[in-house]
Image (cartoon, rainbow, N blue to C red; front, side, top):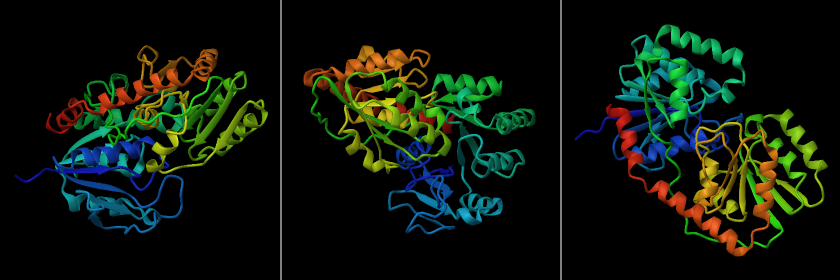
Amino acid sequence: MTKKKLLILIEWFAPGYKAGGPIQSCVNFAYALKDDFEIYVLTTDTDHGETEPYPNVVADQWMEYKKDGFKIYYAKRKSLSKTKLKQAMMEVGADYIYLNLLFSPYFSVYPLWLKYMGKLKGKVVLCPRGTLYDSALAVKPYKKKPFIQLFSWLGIHKKILFHATNEREKQAVQRFFPGSQVLIADNLPNSNQRPFTSYEKKPGSLKCIFIARIVAIKNLLFALQFLENISAEIELTIIGPSEDKVYWVDCEKKIAQLPANIQVNYLGAKRNDELAEIIGKHHLFVLPTAGENFGHSIFESLLGGRPVLISDQTPWLNLQEKKIGWDLPLNHPEKFQQAMEEAAQWDQASFDEWASSSWEYAKKFISNPALHSEYMQLFHS
């Protein structure tokens, strides 16, 4: 039987990694569904925030992706145009078009306009990936809110299906686009889980890791501020591109003011395939984010058997009762401090208990057969 064609549009895809979670979501999506559909990925040849294209990538033509069972088109960023994208889309003639993020001019807005004008015949599924949360809309609202109003006024939402990755996102979609058709399917995480490994843990010291783009919403400065009141020996490793240079300067100032028992190391951005080994050399993942649609780095830590200290603004909730971490309110920074002090006092047996609970939790999550069926429902509803 001939497979239906599924076209994924996203501004950045592997080997890119600097745009964070959306890349990982789409890579996992393509691999998970390649046996069910003929998958095509339309993206650009340059990573987020970079000016030079990926090395060894052929641009502006459809080609096999690493012999992994789907095709990819890396549009040359420096000569990106609507004409080029439209031609690439029309060459596929997809039965289904899957869009990511709401405000990408070329990879969401333009395809939605083509759908509205009747130029795209396939069924369009749009995953906002957290772009409709208040925390995300607070960034450049002067651009986003007029677009949402126009989108709604034209009734574009009535011509597509929304893919929400959780109930909170479904409510956000329905708030801005009443009457929309919305289906929930949880994010597809990395399912390549290594065997469980421990790490040496002595009471009174703690190795923590923060993995995220360095922008205000990820709240690194908040973490540095509650660190200064901790008495234990803390080593914090920071990984991620310093996307907001002004914000990073503020973080550097705070780092310079931290007491001698707090050591901070900044490693810059790292490829996704490097993270598991780095996470394994730490005890606790820290991300007091102002809002996550999924939080791939959070799950990556659990997948590697490391508990997490995060805010309550993610889908990962009620962690303490499972002994896999803490999800805490941002208006109580003292609770973050208390949790870190508690983790710092773990002995080897206590750390191993929380670490193995985290690993088992992630194993159960990726083994859930409902994940795949939820995604099939998106295209067959």
